[in-house]
Length: 114
Ligand SMILES: [Zn+2]
Image (cartoon, rainbow, N blue to C red; front, top):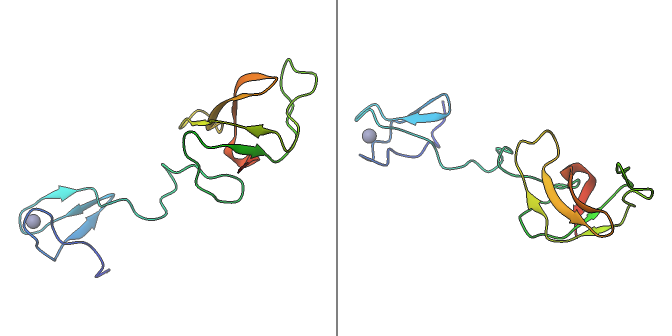
């Protein structure tokens, strides 16, 4: 189907094939997970415009957010420093501390890398 599959890392056989998420070698029956594809999306958290975010990044909140217990909430344009990415906690995937508000979690879809 595709001739771009990598050869078997164990025996260099070129006739590898895909089996679900794994690659399989017909020669030595080796099974392995292929090297991360470019755009799997799973492990990568992107901001509202598609920049890949990383721990320690500074981001800008792009829209005003209501925050429970805060009369002002977070205003659009608020800078948030030193974010920490958290995976799979609802759709809040950024753990951070917002000046004047305190520790909280944000959605990557409402921030832009600064
Ligand atoms: Zn093999």
